[in-house]
Image 1 (cartoon, rainbow, N blue to C red):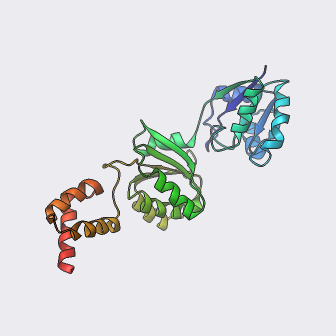
Image 2: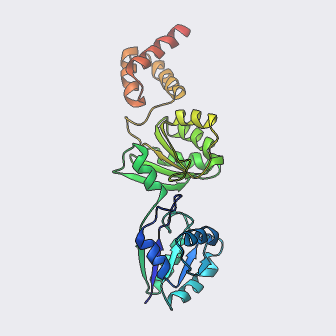
Image 3: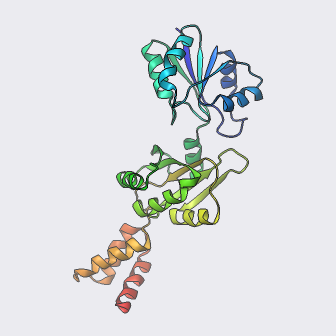
Length: 277
C-alpha cells in the first residue's frame, strides 16, 4: 500500500523547511494542496516539478475518492497553506479515509505557528491547550471564553487582524487582565511578538493597526497570571463591604490574594471609596 505524507511547510520564511520535506515533496507522485498557488511558489523556490491538485475545505468531500485513487498508484503528500497539515484545515477527512483504506499515514514534521508562538511567549509551556480560531460572533466568543476561563493551562488561540481588537476586549472582560503574548507575522519580515497584560495589548493595538497572521498565547487561570480589571475589583470590594463584618484590612488581604492586585493598592481603593461615599 502507498503512503500519505503530511508535510509541514513554512509559515512565512521559505527557508523553514526540512531537507526531508523537500525530498518527499519531490518524490511523491502527487501533492494535494490547500492552495495550489501558494504551494506552487514553494515548489518553484526549491525547483520541484511534482504535479499539484487542490484539496481544501470547499471540495474535500468530492475530492477524497479521487485522492484515494491516486494513493492506489503511488505516494501522495498533503500540504496546507502554511504549517502542519491536519491542524485547522480539512486534512482530518483525508487522513481518516486513507487509514480506513489501509494506507500508511506518515508525518513530516516542521513549522507550526501555535508551537512557535508558545515557545517565545514567556508563558508556561509544560501544559497548554490549543483551541484554534476564536468564534466570529461576539456572543459565541464570550460564551467560549467563559467556558475555558477556569482552565489552569496556557491557552493558545488563532485570530484574524480585523477581529483582534474585539477579541482582546472580550478576553479582558471574560478572563481578566492576564498575561498574554500576541505573535504576529511569525518568521516573516515584519515579525512582532507583543508580551504584556491583555489590557496593555489592547492599548498597543489601538495605536498600531493589526496586520498579518496572529497567534494569541494567554496565561492559564492561576494567581500569578490572572489580574482583575479595576472595574471588577471595585465591584467585588463593594459587595464585600456590604456585610460590614470584616475590617478593610481583612477585605484587602482576601481580595488581593484572589485578584492579583497588591494588598496596599486594594486597601487604598477601599479607603478612597469610603471617603467618596
